[in-house]
Each structure stands twice: as structure tokens, then as C-alpha cells.
Image (cartoon, rainbow, N blue to C red):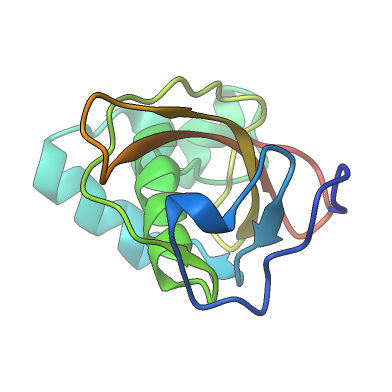
Length: 145
């Protein structure tokens, strides 16, 4: 994945609203999505749909192996964002609009490019809102979310 204009914030530490502009971006490190993660997510959520839990079932449905839950991948990406060298000084997430483009299989490595898509001030002078765009790719560089 490469940047789309703007500055690469990769070496920055804690970023404030004033530190970033629309178009600025950084990449996270990678994370291997393991069978153990899939099993733990299924145990936590109760989502035991067969493509997540059984390799033979996943193959019957046209996948080459067990498929990670889309929400597991989303959760891992949020963790990667919060562990990146460049981090936003933030209070909360206000919403998510995610698309699941391709399956993430057990053993895949995911990473994300996070770009500042926009920013706006709020009625509180010490706060602003950043809109972030995520591009999550697997080890082949294919966008998965």
C-alpha cells in the first residue's frame, strides 16, 4: 500500500487535531490472523458460523480455508491503529462505516493504511473531529476491508 498524497505520519508519536491535515496517512504493522484468534472470537461472541469454525465447511462454500469473522478483523485493525507509532490523541470513536471486500483466512497477515479523510471543529474549543479512511490489506496487497 502506498500513500495517496498528504504527509506520511509514520514516524510521529501522539498526534493532536492541529498536527494533521486531510490527506495525511500512516501504515500500521502487520498482524497474523490465527486459528486461535478465530476460535477465541467465536467463543466470545457466539458466532460459530461454519465457515469460521470448520475448514471442510469453508471449502464447501468455496473458500481455501477457515474464514476470519469480519468483525474480528475490524477489531484487530482498531488495535493495530492504537499500537502504531503514529497515534491520535482521541477520546472516542463516533462511528464506523466498513465494507468487507475479500475474505481474511486463518494465517493471513493484515495491515492497514489509515488516512485523514477530513476534519472539523466542534462547539468545544479544545476538541475536533477527524474522519479517517482505512484500507486494510492482506499479505498479497489485496484490499480486504
